[in-house]
Amino acid sequence: MNQTEETKLLEQTEEWNDADEFSRCIEAIEAIPEQERDYLLTVKLSRAYSNLAVLGDHGEHAIRLLESVRTQGENDPYWNSRMGYSCLMAYSSAAIAYEYAKRWLALAPDDPAAQKLVRDCEEYLEEEKALEIDLKEREEFIRRETPDDEKGVICK
Image (cartoon, rainbow, N blue to C red; front, side):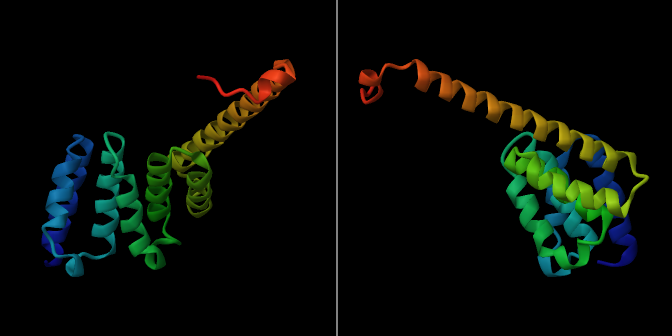
């Protein structure tokens, strides 16, 4: 694939992505043999899988793709953004995504999208912490309120 063809493909995948046609992005990029895909095509493919993860379970595939170009991407704001979003989708936990979001923000401090992902992750982490505390409080309440003779009984 020459530079002109790749540029056209990248522009087309952006249009498909904006139109929520993630499967078309995946099909077009995966039509190129893996050994011929460069860094940017690999990251764009992971983006399509990550966006599709919202609708299904492709988030881990997006992460595997990003891991395959980690050496090239770990100091790239775009790679960190894709990894942050992918981790958030795949793991449904903000802890891992937060690390990539902070790295993205450090690399691109004026990027409003990076700032937003960091804030969102912080809010998710606070919610997770509150839920964990609530669950522990409920468990402790149940232990205190359950008579000792019922603690060993298995519900049927």
